[in-house]
Length: 380
Image 1: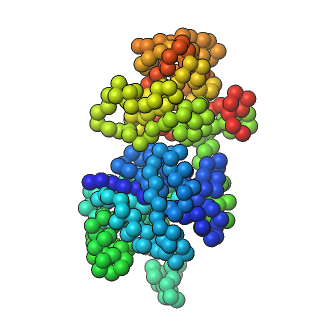
Image 2 (image 1 turned 90 degrees about the vertical axis):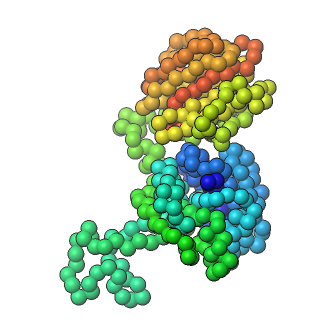
Image 3 (image 1 turned 30 degrees about the vertical axis):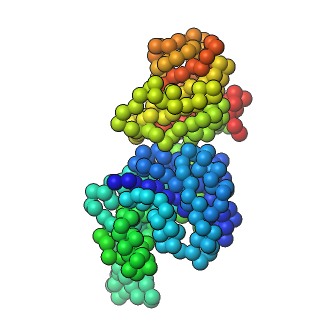
């Protein structure tokens, strides 16, 4: 089964101007869901679907794919059914998962759980929902309470479920069949339909300026929630970075591949030979909830910025060349065949040495915080 992730994004949003590229906590809004989709590791391909070439550049930056939809499918009157149908008619697949950039706090675990459910239950359509466990009324009539009875504790009420929409899934053949029969496939039509409950911050949907303001608060809270008081105080002088593509870019790594990961078998020599070794590059080969493994090649004089990880140990294996390694102010020269272990909390810096590209395997995890002193290259 070929599983495609599709992120719809048009430039002409009305309520929040250009919201898909507007920064949220220092990163374009659409970048948050792209990052999560890539980290989930469950998709054969990830596409941005838009009429604007701006999103081609964003897709290239994140090393994902771009589908340019016709202009008329990005108008205010074009429906979700319309642009999904167009996408399915032009991009091959078996199962399509739609992810909305306006749901930036959707988690890796939720994406994985969603895809697993639609596969395990053999569903034609899977709809994300959120629960409201409060008295609800529809067209003036009570839904889940007795209007003539006493008010029950909220935990005793039957929940009412509303569409969350942040993640939706359809089998190609079922969606296309429903579109042909009903001119509608979004709600599932004749197929087997399931519901997947989202909770907490994942249900936050950005539709207006107030939503964006709230999302900024949530993003900063989530970034800092695991830090103790001392770490929070240190933020004034330190910069926390967790998004690996941005980290590598800031470290000067030119070409980064985050798509060809979690393959059953990889060959190091084949990966090295597939890249342009006249420039720096990285190639992530493993990315799971347990660990992440990335091959990194840099030219003499290149390296990373001085940093540390507050809650995660990591290690490297040197494949080729030499590296100058600074660990807590002490310098080492590391060569081919060496293994380097860095304990959490220890500041370290790596610089390629010698007269040829230096290549290392870095083993850590994809969401580990990197803490930089601002004066050492952290960005305010």
